[in-house]
Length: 103
Image 1: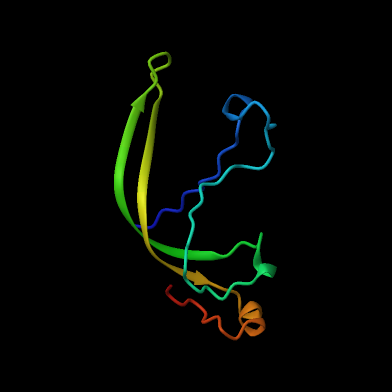
Image 2: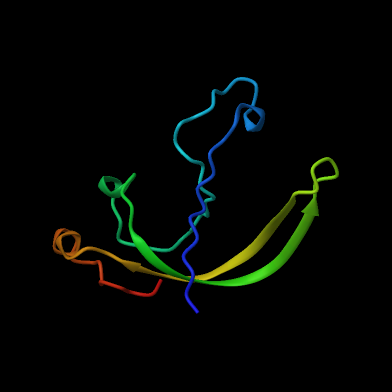
């Protein structure tokens, strides 16, 4: 079964640090890749790419708010690998990119 989940979260003023202001843009969780050549350049910063990610579920934490009895669930994953779906026009600009390569 495939299920696409939008991970964007709109931040309220109660979620923000005192010095920052609420953003109209949603917050997205992120991860960091170290010491791997992905053949992406500084020109690719802020671009969006589709990717297939293999993850291992490390933990699942369920909480219930005592006041309103709402349930929240958090998940923690290990990212094992990622396959980028890079547009053809980008691949021609960067010969090292192998379309749909597994990193």
